Amino acid sequence: MSLWILVTGFLIIRFVFFAFGSYSLFYKGRNQRWISKKIQKKFPSEKMIKFEIRKSFVNLIALGLLSSLVLLEIRFDMGFIYKDFQTYGWGYFVVSLVVLIVIHDTWFYWTHRLMHLPKFYKWTHSVHHKSTNPTPFSSFSMDWTELLIEFGIFPLLPFLLPLNPLAISAFAFLAFLFNIIGHLGYEIFPEWLLKSKVGGWINSSTKHNIHHARFNYNYGYYFTFWDRIMNTSYKIENYEK
Ligand SMILES: [Zn+2]
Ligand SMILES: [Zn+2]
Image 1 (cartoon, rainbow, N blue to C red):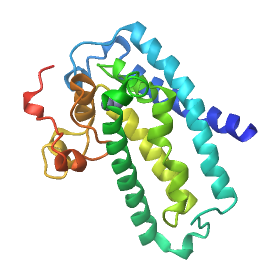
Image 2: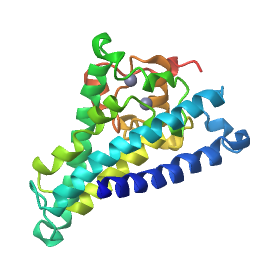
Image 3: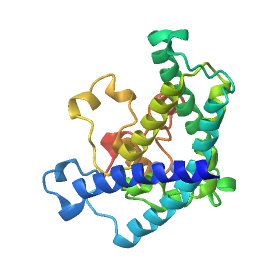
Image 4: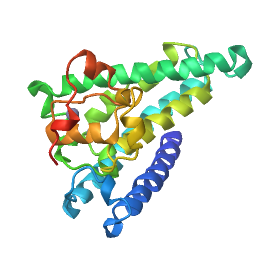
């Protein structure tokens, strides 16, 4: 219980730093410096932002529970956890990190599509889609059932492949950062990158923003490969803001 409180406290501080920090950098006073990067020209209402913040705090408690489970697995060397970095070295560390990202991206794409089915949508994903013009606070604005589905795979990961605690931490931070970036409301990836061959595989801020505005496209988290395979990508050139 005390671990859960401690971890939730950490998650709240991290969320406040990144979500409130990016909000004040980009949105406060409708900062003209970034205005050309704004994806939708309109700004969301204050009422909506307050709703997103309220929802986020509830979900950080749920995320605190999942994170505490992972920490307990590390503490008791459960699954394939290895603490001596030298056991597999740097090469494996990088590979394991990439594998974690691919597993999560696949898990997210398919559970996300499942939650868009009318049977499940209303009691899971509909809250997240109240944000049609996302802000950094939309990143955790969802029903708690959705949070447990999307991030519920985290405590299972140490049972799938050998993982060093550092790989788990780096992956968890990347997942958090990508969530904030996807809901930023501003495109922060440089244009040259997005227009390149590699950039086309990144699920950029604009792509997730389109998911919130158009609903039935761009279901991915980090990458676009599942959207490409399943033909659910939205053609950006057709997008009217
Ligand atoms: Zn979203
Ligand atoms: Zn969705």
